[in-house]
Image (cartoon, rainbow, N blue to C red):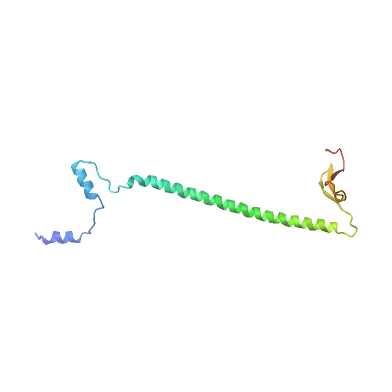
Length: 144
């Protein structure tokens, strides 16, 4: 029998090394003593992963809440700008009414329904008195 043959076969086998702590685990099992864990931080892996997942989830929820708040603030800015434009338009319209050549203050119909209409008489406001609004009946009794 050729003694060189087994040596050649063994040399051709891939070389791999045992992980850290493998020898200590084997020796501990043979001696009957408690096994040394191969990776001492393994006990912390699951709680650390849970904490990491919780932090990522909280961060995602926080980011979504901030994004919604920014969108609401932008919508409020747009609405405020529209209100300011309408206010300026109404102020200019009232100023134009005051500067008419007949200089008679207008009576403005604000709104109403089938029973009553709300009217503002600027003639009464010109005297320096408190602004007075009056309700003109269109039909039925008027609630005061």
